Length: 388
Image 1 (cartoon, rainbow, N blue to C red):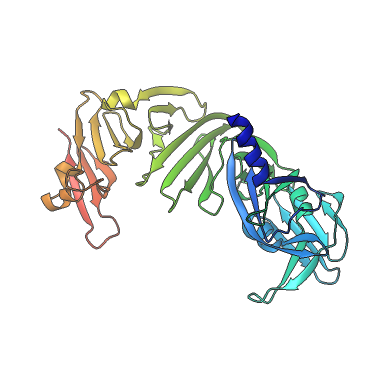
Image 2 (image 1 turned 90 degrees about the vertical axis):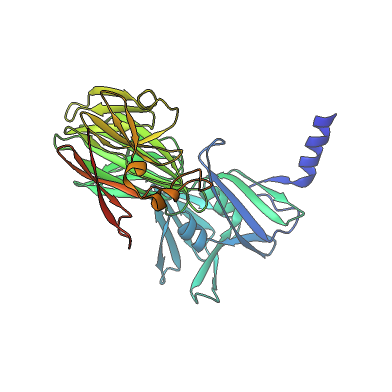
């Protein structure tokens, strides 16, 4: 009985309609939910609608360019708009009922038109909403009659991050983390995936580099949440074009950089297990259990790995800690290097959540470690710690 009541309520609250059906009620706004699949939410787009002769239209300049990562080319003589993106091309012509999407002719249920934007003074392009949903891979719409809102789910988006390295273009789709590589003008080929969506907007980046012995490293950084306090780092190692190693690391609030090299080899860490990868071959030559090393279940950023010591931070408190690899002795460095007043700003017993200790490791000379406190600030100091 309860299930029947619930289903009845859902059906009364929203009406599902196929792409080419006419809405049963007038709508004034739209909402598009973008996702690769039902388990991978990517973000949403929304805006106002315009109704002409019973057909609902939406403005596509802001949606396609501002939200979905496409670029607009406008041909004034032909009154034609071409929206180009990664593995996507949409062409619409004003007063023409046929669109061209990925080189396929798609009929529309009404012709596009333009209106001058009162703010930008530019021409905005309006396309039937059902055609837009079809262009983006959608199959149905549903209406919330109380809110006069028309909704479509599971639509594609084409936002990407790219880096060009040694003649190759590396492109990652933000909607699902798929990585593609293309050489000059050749078609892109999928080479790997991080299997997660990146931030809908601009808070992500990709960097490609090579090791001295010819391995290629692709690093992706991503920030999300509001105000983007959650950070993720992804690292992929390629040998002769093939993915051989992969790892990821999550951060929260305070973000620090994982060490990337040790004895001319590569470091990969997921925060709990660390692997030393031999340059050139890609073989794992050392494994380190960071939880076992520290004796505390947490995730860790390793800022320096050396033959006798490790400098790392637990994600939970972000305090730079020195661990002797032979004895296991642990030293929380802010307690040794900072003044009493400075320590009070870090100590979680005096601050509700504690703050970053503002220590940056610089270098080592013999048994002396060099640090900077408050780097690039007015109270910057140079500090040293002597190993026993």
